Length: 336
Image (cartoon, rainbow, N blue to C red; front, side, top):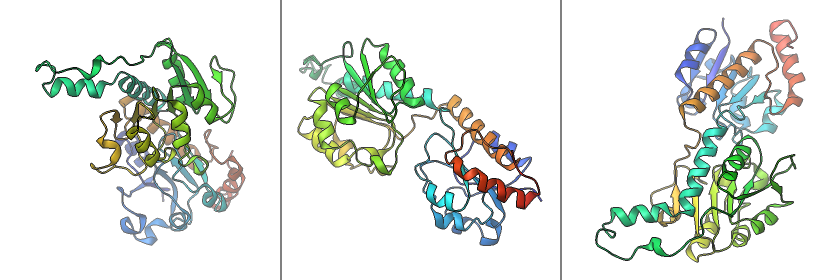
C-alpha cells in the first residue's frame, strides 16, 4: 500500500499529479480534518503539505499518528506549532526563497505607489475632478524616492531582494535583522534605530510570537510625517489600531499592505477607509514562476522525507534523529 500524503492547502495541480503517481493523496480542500475525513482514513498519513499561515496545532497532529513530515508550501511557517511537532518527532520543512522575487516586486510596487500617492492621483482622474479643472491634490509637493532612506526590517531572501531593488532608486538602504550580514547596506542595531533612521519602512521579517504588533505607535512615530510603512510579511507584525491612529492624525504619510491581521479584512475595515493606504489581498507571492518554484521545492522535500533522505530545508533539524528512528521502525532501514 502506498504512503498517504495529506494536502491541507491548495497545491499546484501538476505536483498533485506527480504525487498521485507514487502516493495516495488525501485532499482536505480547505476543510478541518475531522470534517474532511473519517478518523480511520487519517491513521496512515505519513506526510502533509500545508500553507505556512494555516493553523496546525497539536490536536490536529494527534489525528495523524503516523505523521512524520510537514512541509509548508511557501516561506512562512508561523501557523505550525513547532513545539508540538518536536514533541511528536515530526520534521517540518518550508520553501524559503521560492517566491522571494515576486514578493519583493510587490513590496516595491506598494512603496512607490504610496510614496507617489498613486491612489489619490487615480481618484483625481476617475472622479472627473481633473476634467472639471478642480484643484489637484497632487500639486502639493511630496518627497520622492531619490535620496530617501529606506529601512528593511528582516534580511532574509525576500529582504535582500527588496534591498537590491530599492537601491536602484538612488536611495540609501538600511536594515535591522537578528543577524548582521556582510552586505552593502547600513546595519541598524534595533528596530527603533531603524525607524529613527528611515522614512520608508518595509517589513520583511519572518512573523512569530516574538514580533506580534511590534510595529506599534512608537515605531510609527519615529518614521515621521513623511513616513510610509509597507508590509509583505504577516499582518500580525503591525498593530493595526496604532496604524489607523497614525494615519488619522498624520503621524505618517501612507501605507501599503499586502497582509492583514485577519484575512480577508471586512469592507468596513478602518484601514480601507483611507485614500493613502494601498490594499492588496495577500498575493505578493502569486506569480506563475513563484507558484512553480514553491510547488517544486515542497514536492522535493516530501519525496525526500518519504524516500528516507533528509530534506535540505528542515526548520527543526533537532527532530531529524527522532524522525529517522521512527522511519527505521516503520520501514526497516535508517534514512540518510
